[in-house]
Length: 515
Ligand code: NAD
Image 1: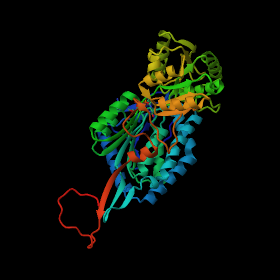
Image 2: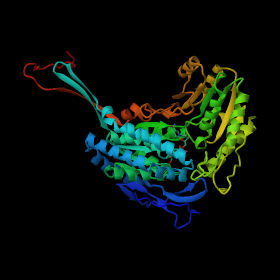
Image 3: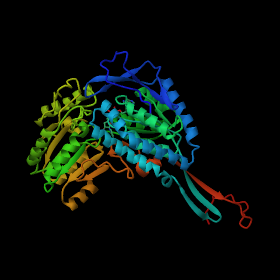
Image 4: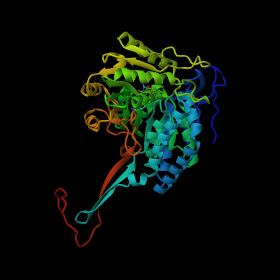
């Protein structure tokens, strides 16, 4: 498989800095827009490439590519589509390390975490290989005398997928395996911060036998997104990203008559009841708070400690933080946590710790100004633990999206529940307890889409569906699972009668009734 060789360049202006292109009609498509954005290696701070930013003409070219892809792909029988999906699954499984290295180089997460995201995406590919069962429609024989009624699930056509920086492989894989299985052609618009994973997957699809254009990659920013939102050819938009953009996408796509699912930001709480095993809780709080440097929409960012557990729990979390190894995710030493995505994002995360401090929180572990030897220009931020964070502070109410874990002390289960339910997000949450009755009550009372019971990051398996409530999801359909198949198909109901001389009816202008 050919891959563009990208190494860490030292500056934006270096003439040898490669440009990451679009993927139209089954091949790399260089951009003529004259607009690019730098793609960094967050661990070194170096520019490793520039990514093309589409103009309107390139959006049109992407749509034309996908249209041709749809014409070809929609003629494939179910059996042939299945063969291509199985081939993609085998290629992905055998080469996932290559993809993990690309993710680590552009996102910064450590290799084991990049492998984890690929495996969770691969689950959706595996689900999609079983698609015939899920798109086969239904048949009612003799619904009325001599009349049969059946429903068909047909593809939408060309569909758009717009993804965030934090899961450059998994999030597109939440959607495209199912969209393709259902017979659609997809245009993936990756994040401009880590655009190479989608290109790599495009090459894999070609090798798997997908017709050219059925998987099109459009690199770009708002211009590319707006082009997709306004195109009458694009039938649906699947978006994942921050809440303000998710809301914009939802409103604009809906106004333009598209089917849309737009997943937004999060602020996930872990409620710890006094009977919980505090060692388990501390392990899981550290894993879920600092994995991927907190750049996960399902990261735990608030621990609600029902007293009297807070002091003991903070001690255990602090001990574990001290043992975390932070470094370049690509290093053979395999650190636990890598850098943040950009210098700007690191500074934003830092500003939230300033806000918490100014609002009266106690800084138990301070990650501000964290430096990794030999990687002084990397975008590192150390694991941070805050205690007694006021619930009026922006550090509590807003998504930080970094390795900052806040402890809020509450007196009762009810007080903790009420804090979770009063938040504007409703993506994920977890309760830690050995009391089954309390856990059962929690799952009924909490206003959140994905709930963990002694599980800190309750990302549902591929055959359930992923999605939050409130400002964490705009639209009716969640990602993957049965929701995914419903989203990427359009149903037709056919009412059919084959004339039988014995029952032939004559004239009747009344509304059809069943008999
Ligand atoms: P983002 O909203 O900045 O960008 C997401 C996508 O939107 C990118 O492809 C980007 O190019 C595009 N975009 C950015 N600004 C735009 C604009 N003004 N108009 C049109 N398009 C625009 O998000 P991000 O920083 O890449 O990702 C982090 C966010 O994603 C966090 O808020 C995180 O919680 C969220 N996220 C949510 C989920 C979920 O399942 N709910 C999953 C992963 C990430």
